[in-house]
Length: 105
Image 1 (spheres, one colour):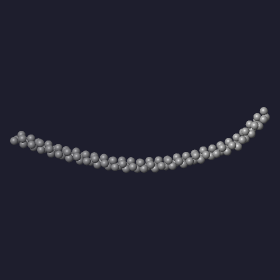
Image 2 (tube, one colour; image 1 turned 135 degrees about the horizontal axis):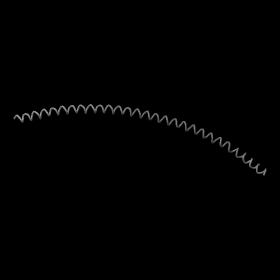
Image 3 (cartoon, rainbow, N blue to C red; image 1 turned 135 degrees about the vertical axis):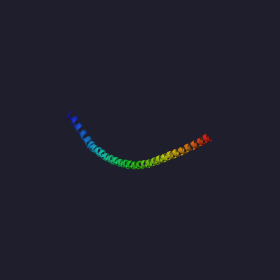
Image 4 (cartoon, rainbow, N blue to C red; image 1 turned 120 degrees about the horizontal axis):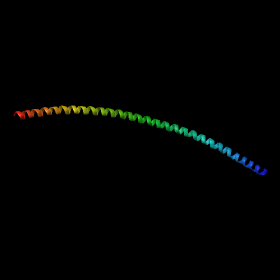
């Protein structure tokens, strides 16, 4: 039985000689990859923020242009309504005078 424990002890020492450095390497690799992932995430976030700011500027510019065009269209519509009302009142006066002449004549 003592022989079994001696063999087990030697096997464990051999595994320890291989396993401990391997686990150290694995942990170091994990830490380094974690750092690289953090750096990559920061770069991606910075790129996304830059793009979002650029898109916000574009949309703000587009909103201002649309508001200006809407204002111009509203002014044109109001001017056309006034012109139509003026022409309509002139036509009513003309029809009224024509009817008056037809009734008198």
